[in-house]
Length: 81
Image 1 (tube, rainbow, N blue to C red):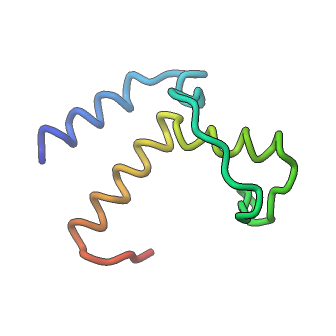
Image 2: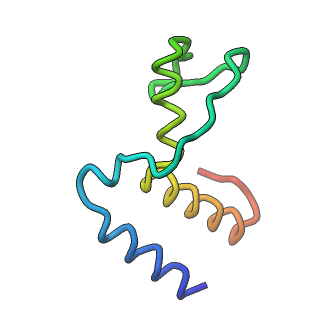
């Protein structure tokens, strides 16, 4: 596990500028019937805004955040603030 954390830290450390916010792959559109909350917590209904929002799921910062959340869950066995 130490090697994986070191690799993640190195990957995050060399990710600069626009790359940090750039989608690494196309994320499929979400079903319009499913609600989608934006960064402020409000529902996003505009199709173009929804598309841009779900593309954030494949940005380096989002992938790194997800990896850390999963690691935290695996280590603690629970979701906690």
